Image (tube, rainbow, N blue to C red):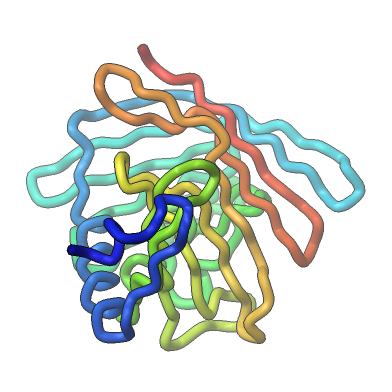
Length: 230
């Protein structure tokens, strides 16, 4: 009989270090290998709130499409476009265009922590780059926001200044979606918290309707509201 069967659903289940590394690596590989079932395009509104409660609203165009060898996700505002090329277990590639500055480049290293359109989202956040880090540990299984979750800790072997040293993700058992994620700085202090606010099942697929990322150190936050196709 498994440990999970002996414990009440509300009690967390902690894994041994060996099992944590084995299951963590398998879960991260599963997350990065997921491909969209179909091409999609929709619009959203990104609301950026600074520490003084000033708000800026920006229209965002989202696009997901497959190619013969991989799939891409594109995020576009009037000032910036980021295209993420997902290639399974291989590291993502991030193509960035900033027309007003005449810049078009592939982001690497510290450039991945550039903010997307002056929001709290870094470029690397758009591709969930932390799932590609080499050290992945499934530390426990517990309830989070009323959902049964697997808790994955991703550690960055070479964190850059201003980057993340580790990310802890609560991944829903049913949908494999992120229920919450917390990113920590080089000193181990909480830097950002990502929370999908609303998730809806449309045409048999779970789709994110609203998400928010809060910067615990600056007091700013960014919320994105999606206009979902039905």
